[in-house]
Length: 238
Image 1 (cartoon, rainbow, N blue to C red):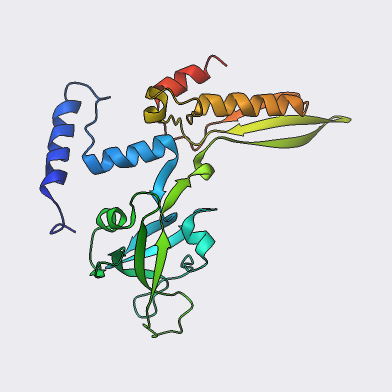
Image 2: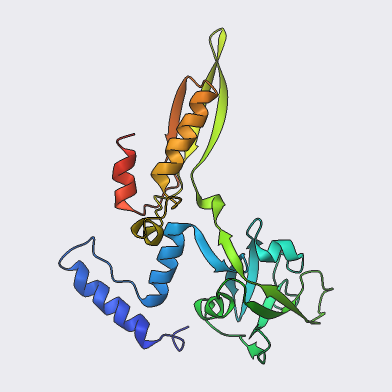
């Protein structure tokens, strides 16, 4: 891991240490981290729709994003278990279109992710070792996927209804879970009417809960890691 450290990583560490001596709320984002920040804020990306994780020298598929290209293709599966001698699904090579496959064993996770991501409509080939293989079976296969725009809806605000017994009657409460304060900055600045926003989603969910005649609404922020300050402050005025 130390040998994989790049000059960009060192620069980011230094600049962040320098900036935070003056302002603890100022953070420098490298180009790669800025791209990931935009994805987290807009809840969308262009790729195959698979969550990946480092596992020693390999990258394994953790889960498939619902309605993403990987799930719809039925060619990939998440790894239930992974061990060094009997690995589950592991990406061992990534090919761009019809270019020659590149061995990515031992690569950094972010470098593999950059190879797999790409513009909507383009193709990527993956050589994988399926999780369904028998123990010690290292047989691989090559699959081709077409990248699409993937919506990360599981990270968006969502609602549920609780029916609680109180004395002799039942109380109907609505719960809105907000996992992050997200805002599609690019779409917002471009004036697109359908830009993704925490405030807009929460307003819609409140209206839906009112239509279902709940007696109260609870906002669940327990797993909220932060995000857009603009969205956090606007929500307080709802």
